[in-house]
Image (cartoon, rainbow, N blue to C red; front, top):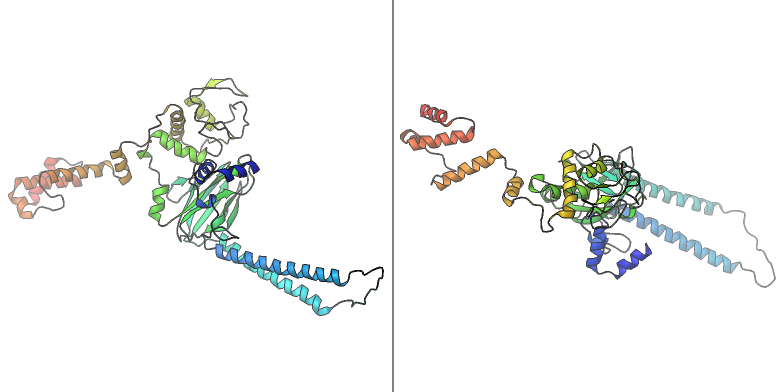
Amino acid sequence: MLNQLMLLGQQTREEMIETVSKQTQDTSVPESAIEHAGTYWFPESASSFAPAVDSLYMIIFWICVFFFAGIVAAMVYLVIRYRRVGNEINPEPSTSHNTWLEIAWSVLPSILLVYIFWEGANGWFDMRIAPEDAEEIHVTARKWNWQFTYPDGDISNELHLVLDRPVKLVMRSDDVLHSMFIPAFRQKVDVVPGRYTYAYLMPTRVGQYRLACTEYCGDEHSNMRTMCEVHISEEDRKSTTEWQEAIYKPWKNGERLFKINCSGCHDVEGVAKTGPALNLIWGETENFSNADSLTVDENYIRESILYPNAMIVEGYSPKMNSFEGKLSDAQIDQLIAYIKHLKIGDPEDDGILDPEAAAAAEAGEGDDEAGEGESADGETEDGESGDEEPAEGDEEESGDDVDNSGDAAREEDPTAEGDDDTSEDESDG
């Protein structure tokens, strides 16, 4: 740890950001992870609870300072006043007790303790009891990463919140005891296996903030860090958390799954962590401590995901959890495509499909909507206005207008035949 601190002290700002990024599951690095922001005593404040926590802390601090100074001053005075002078021992008479003094040092501290307890209890309940309209975000902690699931089904390994929107976190652990800590929110809550724990957040400041596990959970505990980002609006958050698979190639979708599920234990830059690095294994021969050697292919990766302890790579321990029932076959295929891409893929490939297809997917257009758009374009090219409807008189006098009516009917009912639509329009006329 000391060597790491010394190394960070010698790095430039850019090098520090790169170092911290590698240790935080490839997530964004908040400014507060590099430079201290806030007051001398506290990090920056970004939640509705932070002011109350900070003020109670300072009240307790100054109470401690007052009593510490008073006790030390009294001790110094008594040591000097009643010190032995020479060899003479002349004890002075003293009273057996002082009723008012004893009442004072019993009642006054009791009042202070009750006040501190009252303020602390109120703050604790405020952090745990969310309003009924709070947004629910499910948090899953596992060695050694985080997963956040939003009400619309989006998933990320960073926590994304909306400014001034109350949030209820429903948390569970897949393996051992963890603890989620967001310093800027003054929130620290244990995440316990086998049960749910809860927290209430009310972000009050847009920005990026540190989020880390503060309960020792194994070898990579210190790297179980990510980011909490507060967005100005729901649209801004959605643009970050929404993931449309149709826009990306399978390996790009697999990269996202890797960051969410695997980056806590595996590296993709050749560095061994709790598990082996995955960027160079495709097509290579792996040696196992409990099985015969084999070449890394689709079958091996699939089995390693579903039954990780069936074949343990030499030099590693059986610490990986099974993802059976957690990942679909399609998602496993995407992870396989990503691991294959790391070894033999084109480094210049950005993983985005044809831009036109991506634009259509982003707009959420279906085949029917695209067909309607093409019809409208065709009418415009022919000189007709797609926004204006022909007058009834024109429909009765012109056969072309009748045909245009048929086109409009076919837009409303793509399955209907053109002749039927035309005859219906003529009868209406």
